[in-house]
Picture (cartoon, one colour):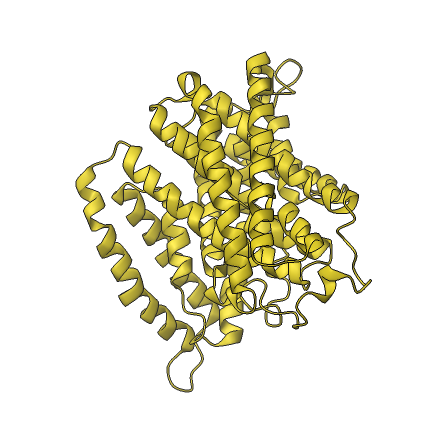
Length: 435
């Protein structure tokens, strides 16, 4: 036991150090930190170091992997809570129709294209059967990474443009639909006690009717006495973990419990300073230490040394389908909403960003046995490539023109607007801290 504890802390130090270095290198190259963290996982895994020196030679990874995985899951739960909270319906103000058109196109076309593209691969990569594999692949390709997109918009100084607002709102709707679809697929095709699912409506009713009012009361405080932010963080974190446990018992992955708990949290009734301190406290816990561990652990599952010609062909097919269907769907939606051509192109490129959300969904799919290890590696590489290409596509297409008064900057003539839940003024760094 003593050795296992020592190995765990040694492995955690190694993971955090390599993740930090790779994330810094990724930022210097103009890419989100999650790209570097996934690369760190690949480096520490069996792709590059398996035939030279591997950290597994110094640290018995099989012993510490469950401990690292548990710690990473806590970080993921905190992060999904923050993402659920950011899904404020207020982000549709001022760009509702355009955002809904873009979101509809960017979900339906990749969903259909992903399902069709998955059919030839089902015989070799579907551990639990073709239907679940096909539907899961369609859902995975329909994702847009809401948090990574926020960072890209800030880096490219597009977060206050019309195209940036529309893309951010559409990504929020897109991810909400994707998580809902994944919950349905998980409920239909995973082996769980079916009678547990009968309690899902009760769980949702308790969240809305009991948890939300209690949270509003906690954040608002009683009378003249202001509640303690530290105590509020602890209570909210405890409620979050209980929600995760409930959804696991119901037969749904814990990420849905974390996301739902964040989505029902009150926004208007809470005191602004306390609300910001609570959210920032939970987000910092997730993003600075725990979430990098999650993405490194996810990266260790990617083994490119096992790729055969068929796998490379599969990667080419899935990458082409993912890019073409996502950008075409978003572009058609933007055109249907009446956006100018240049603005529609910008939105289409931005919606192709997958990053964080895609990696989380793929890991859930691997854990639920919708896909096998090889197809997981294919889709992870696809997710990283689609995220990496966003910045270059914006620049090569001449779509980033800050300060020139062009269409993307003039937009609709409105002010900055609520690109991410309408909280830029009160929480300027909240959407941008996680890259």
